[in-house]
Length: 419
Image (cartoon, rainbow, N blue to C red; front, side):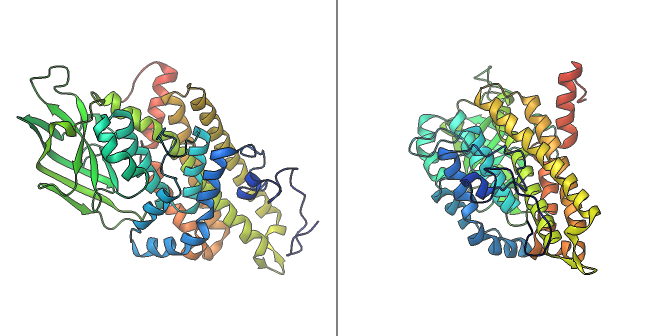
């Protein structure tokens, strides 16, 4: 059989033809050659279909926003309307996704645009998860529904100007002062930290009346309108340009005692939130890689040089096959960590291995796709350069390649090498 350009093709595996099944229509056999996601069904499939379905609606606008570094915050509400901010959390009245379904939503969001993936990661994966895991009943009653519907925006304020990889050494302090906490410090690279509604601020507790908590790290719900909370959008970014990150200054911000997350009593509790989102980053990297690979494949099929489509070149076919090898390995990592999480057996080192492998491999695929597109590869209208730039942020946040590798290295050698 031949495609419209006259390129000879082989039929795809049964059940993987676009349109032959709903998962196949969302990710065809030229991309999911092993059919790793062909069995998705139920709420997971509905959520996957929903996030894929908004692509024609929002992609042209996102490209423009990325170009102008504008944050289309109304998209958070649109994602909430489609119940796509749950990130696998058990929230009454909302869709409950399996780890596989939550991963596919993260994948598809980044396949669309990295900023959309980050919107879900910040709003659902970090801010909402912190409250669901560690909040009081009253805190959940106040914030869960507005955050999961996208009616209000939440931030997760952990990273500081001088503490990224060593965030356990954070210097922000929450001091007990009578019937209030007084918070002082700075945070940096905080999505939704400016122009939002609430920030989950992680700070070291100064409260000698509670020896078990004194000196430990805890989370505090800080409404962004409070006096002393100042946030400035970070400019000059060349990655994730359709979402804003903020530099936050907390100058003796007073919050009531019940603003502390009661379930957050040490950095171990902070890590529980980060561990859950690390797997999401591996899925996001897969989405970016799929977008780049598919753009390269389409270009090879339709671009005619020297009187024939590029896809007729042996060299191009070998490069595309090599990209698919990396893509399939990434998908295998993602499917396995989803299965492990479903069984309750996913360990931090496994999530770290998946994160570092997938962001590293996605960067290689993106660079190869950009090269295959030639000069057209640097145009935003062809999308690859946008994904390539956004992957640089993914490669760094939620733990750099070095830190993830050291976490794995500690596991396999039995010796820590962080210091």
